[in-house]
Picture (tube, rainbow, N blue to C red):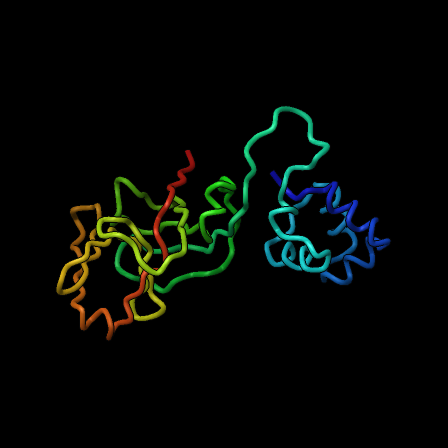
Amino acid sequence: MGINTELLRNTRRDKKLTQDEVAKQIGVSRTSYLKYEKGTHEPDYDTLERIANYFGLNIEELLGASSSSKGPKHSSKTKIPILGSVQAGVPTEACEVIEGYEEIDESLASCGTYVALRIKGESMSPKILPGDIVIVRLQADVESGEVAVVFVDDDEATVKKVVKHSDGVSLIPYNPSYEPMFFSNQEILSRHLQIYGKVAELRRKF
């Protein structure tokens, strides 16, 4: 599913705007904008936001299926950004460069804010492998035993199973070759240990 080309064209025409005018306002060339309306090229997330804001639409509307589409209807999808990579190993500097998009069901998207992250490292093998994409629900806490993206020292992130104790928390790898990481209650504060989000889905390309 891509941008709703029919909505894009009709909204522009309703506002009596030319393609040149819209392209200038959103900071792209007329050729690029023409491709958006034809559906032959997808705007990046920042451009998509500018289009939505300029036309007074929301991104979900712009990413909806065109009403002129033929064939059976499918459940609506929402695109979420892939914010680079996160380490399944020792904590590493978090990367928030958008490298693409994943689609999730609208029913899932309506339950919170989600991002996608690409896995590096072997510590969560064999369940989560390098190159896999995890769909993460942004939330500040998880239940003990759930898998989460965790920030350590503010700007380092890792994917681990979170196990809570009365005196601290353990970040547990699935791979037995890696040691669990334990943080006392004092270290949780001093090292700014923070849950970034819960791993909700795993995507694997074959």
